[in-house]
Each structure stands twice: as structure tokens, then as C-alpha cells.
Image (cartoon, rainbow, N blue to C red; front, side, top):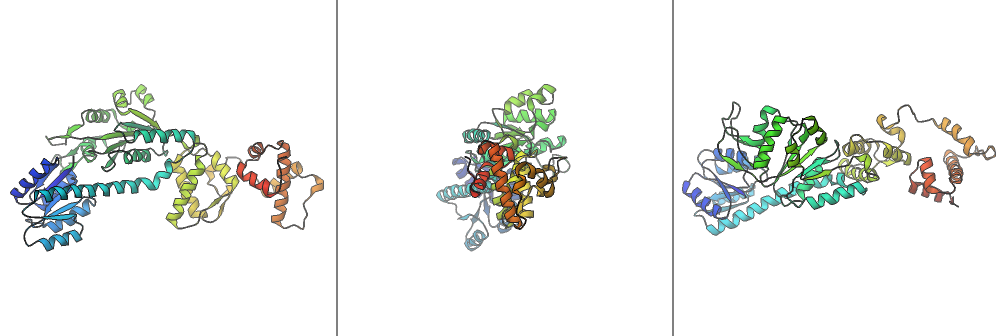
Length: 467
């Protein structure tokens, strides 16, 4: 149900508008002054405001500017009396959605309200898409585990079912929650995120349920809580496993009843929210240890979705690195780095404890430091280099390889330049190793640590046949 705030000092106007709008099924809020209206807008977060131009104290144009500053996507319809049409047009130029003239027309009010609410809905939807789409790369993947996850997410998103997202830090749980919200019928309503571990216990009720003016010493104005902000939308409870048992009990009550009173208030507020929770903890172990409520666990775990760690996603690393690199090159206006084959092999072997988030940070570092250059394995961060296994020097590598692959009679011509000498060595090395592997290119790729398609291009370039 959309909320509409009427700010007008004339009680008959407020009464008339309330009757028209409530007949259309809207919830109506009222304020007699601009100052009161701004407080109500901050506390109640309406979907539309009808604002009179002439008001005692702060005038309508000033109030409109304040509303747009505090709530950029909130549509405002100006109410203009005789002789204020020019002012109303000026208000539209400054961002108001439309204006209606006194005496009020029933048909005009209904049409303008419907159109303004639709416009506000579209703006919020665009904002959601701008937030989610640039990061959708993090959910791409062709590995079996990611294809299964994507299929489940696509099936669950359009429903109102509650979801519990699990996975290690950095796997993209919040992004998955935003994708679930963006794919739901609630996409034009807000998704409100709550970091359950970050809210002090003494403030949890005020944060979640809001408070009335004067409810405690610092409550100088009424404030809506997170549940109320998420009305008709999605509530994302992040790090749900880090809440205290006392906080868990309070959240369980509101989740079951979907109604509450603000701190210091007596009015019961009902909400309609879809809940998505996320944790990197094993909640079943937490239940066994007595640190997480079993009833809350089963209340949240209607559909469990597990985001696999990057190390279990097969070839997705290559896809993600390419997607991140392309996007980051646009952001930083630079050329893409080129990863040497041995560098990519090392990246594929690295366990990525920080998962996709760590990969994205790595991609950004490489774009900034090596844009347009080749990234060698020696350029990788220290944590990606095997401990106690320093890269051998060129002389050591040559001395180690030459006896095994180059017979004494096949000494390289000392008159060749470096590039040609390296090509001759590579050709002889690959030919000898391919012979050892019985002509099996896949086995050769595994033996010498090269990606198969790259190895195939090398062999073709040197005219070496697997036969």
C-alpha cells in the first residue's frame, strides 16, 4: 500500500484529499506546516507528497528543496491556489513532479497521484539496477556449482519465499541478495540491509523498530526503523550468525508477527517484508553449541542457497578475471594487462581465501600497475608465490633443462639473437616432452604446466605434430 503525505495548512483541503486518496486504497499522512511535514517525511518515508505552495513559516518551495535534498527519488506534487500558477511552474522546473489547482478536482488528483507513484517506482527500480548490474559479473560462471546456483536463484527470486544465503566471506552473498530482490515483484520497493553484528545490543530495538520523538535523551525527532523502511520490499539480515541470543529473540518475534511498536510509541505498525538472511557461520554447529536459536534458524531457512568458494568453481576464475579486467579498464581508462600462461596457471592453483572479493581487488591492482603490459609470475603478490620455492634464475633453469632435452650434438648456434635462440629451444623442448608423453597433448599440458589451448597454438606455430 503506497503512503501519501499531505502538507497543507487548510484542514478542509487535507480532509478532502484524504477522502479521495483513501478511497483509492492509499495510506494517508498529514502535516499542517512545512516543518512538521519534513519531520513526517523523514520518519514515515512516504511514496508521494502533496505540498501546498503557501504555508505559514517555511514556504512550499523551500520545503520542496529540502524534500528533494533528503529524499531525491520522492515525487512531490504542488498544490497551487489562485495566482500561484506561475510559482507552481517554477516549482516543476526545480524538480516537482506536477501541480494541481484549487479547488481540487477528484479526477485530477487520482490521475496525478497514480502517475507520480509510477514515476517514483521507476526511479527506484533504475536505482536498484544501477546498483546491481555493474556487479553482476561476480555471479557469472559456467562451473557446475555456479550453474546450479544460478538456476536456483532464478527460480526463487520471483517468489516471496524467505532465503538463507550461506558461504565464506567474499563469495558474494549480499550481491546474491540484491539479485533476488531485483528479480522479485518487490523490486520497485527498497531493499534495506541490516548488519546484525554491527548494531550494539542497547540500540537494536531503536535500529530495527524506530523510535518516537522524546523516547530517550537523544531522540530529538521521530525515526523509522529498518523494518518499517523495508515495508513492501526486502529486509536483508547480514551476518545473522553473529547476533546475541537476546537480539535473536527480539528479531524472531517481529519476524513471526510482522508488526511492532516504535520505541516510546503505542501505535502498532504492520509491515510486509520479504526476509533474506546471510551468514558465513555454520548455524547447525552454532545451534549445537547453544549460540543460535533453532526456531529462528528454521524460520529463516525456508530456501537455503549456498554460494561456493572460488576454489571450487572450476574454470570460473578465468571468466571472472576477464570480466573484472574489462570493467576496471573502463573505470580507470587504461589498457588491459596481459597474463602470461605461467601466471594464469599460478592464479588457478592459488586457493583464493578471500574468494571473489579478493580476485576483484587483485584484478584492480593489476590493471593499475600493469595496464598494457604482460604480468609475469614474478609480478604476483608474495602470498601467491609458493613459500620456500623461489623462482629459479634463467641460468639455473637453462642448466637444469639442457642435459635432459638437448643432446650435446644439438648445441644452439651462438650467433642467434635471444629471440631466435629461445624459439629454437622451445621447439626442441616441446618436441622432446611430447615424445615422452606419447604424443598426448593433454598429458603434455599437465606435465609442463601450460594451458592446453595455448600449448596447442605453440605446437602448431612450431610445426610440431602430435604424431
